[in-house]
Image (tube, rainbow, N blue to C red; front, side, top):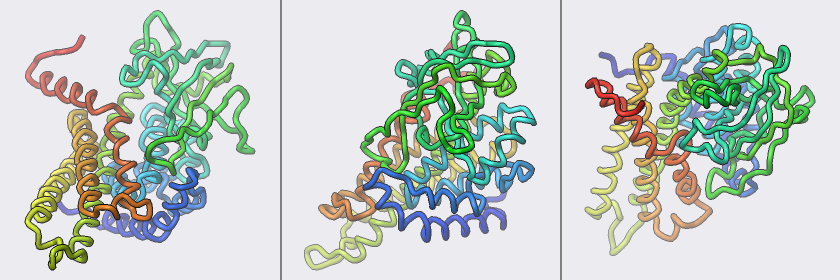
Length: 394
């Protein structure tokens, strides 16, 4: 049993931390206040290989696997959750669906430009009546010759206004429903000039409580033609591809929340060492000591869970239950940690001039997207009962 990161993973962490501090951190406040991501930061991330960390080198990736990808998300989550969300949606679900379900030709066609950052990916699943009930999608894909015609809309799509390549789930056989009659596609949503593909329309930026620097929008398809060769996996089994993709995405989401929780703890430690109340540093107060001890214990437990689960993914072992735990525990631990940090910093923690105020707004969404925490509890319980031979859902 080895609890050490490889030399390659340690070097990758140093590279990412330097990038996060020198490139990401200086741009965070402006991105948050303008609700516009820094395209320059994303371009630089692509130039140094960070847009394709987990994918094999044959497709232009760094070949660092899920462990390397979790390192990326932890380090980005420590500095800016918005950038972590953009890159996470790009790698962990948008491009990952192509890697998991794509034919060799589709991988060769799309992954190199995605790994280099020349193109941004998105993952289009959620609809107005299909949130936690993902099987209730209505977007229709109708076969026409050697193509499919897509009609309908999606909503709450991270990278919706930016992406030129989307993994999209659509119903191809309404009689079978989404679980047996939905198909996943790679859809090119922008042409070579950067303009939207004919029939595709990204909606306006959503005005969100947090993640202001991560663009989210509705998207619509009006007779958008997609080659039949762009099917991911098998016709009618796209739901499987999308659920497999989300399982992997939840591991890296746990890593991003780990970074956010660690940043909150560090903020408290630094502030408590400097701030004096009643003639002594806050660090001398037992209530503060108890608080940081509890936070540190939860963070270390989460760290062990995240990287053990990443190891399971990299070694092709079952990980669905653990992935749900990463997302569930990570999001709730991060929320608790940033809430405590705001409390300790007092009025300063409520100021938009400090990192924690943004972190407080950003943290809440992690309990909702990529499967709400209520859904995670159902999935975890389902796996636990299955291990003892009990099937709790048809």
